[in-house]
Image (cartoon, rainbow, N blue to C red; front, side):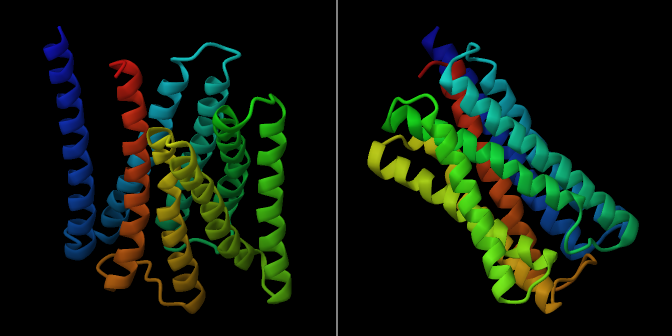
Length: 262
């Protein structure tokens, strides 16, 4: 029985690894070779980004269902799932702009969803942190909300000091928010030795790198919206794709741990 369980688990891991490899290989191949029409190439690239985001949202939702109502871990994963569903919807809106207009506004409805998702991500992580650091039921909520407020205010202040626009605000907010969430996850790993719990969150540090590079590239005008463009645009988009895949891998390991009770 144990041998069969391990075999099934290994098969799932192998299948997930193969799917991840195919997504990366397909993305690079379509971007560099542009084998189809411009619209078809752009559609495939956007789809290959949406698929990992959707996989993350589905996996996190599945993990949440393993816990009973009222359990703190259920709240962690439900909040995390809501945040990722908002991200997935934002990816779809971003793709629609890209395909229909050929470019995306520096601040669009997708950004409203991306930014709003951090409220739920902050709530999820603060509750996760609360489970291992203290046991006050309401304190994690207020810590998460305060953390989001601090990041939001910081991005607003920097935008105001630099004379920036709403578009510039999002360029400041995303890296700050990703860094804040990733830093707390790193504290979880180092201080509480909860590596398996924190791995999904640590992937947000990769989002920080990608979001920073994207904001810089768009601001300076060197980001290319057509396929077959420069290596820098490919690198930025590939890091973003890898961040989603790492997040999916972390949540997938959570799912395996619960399903196979190891």
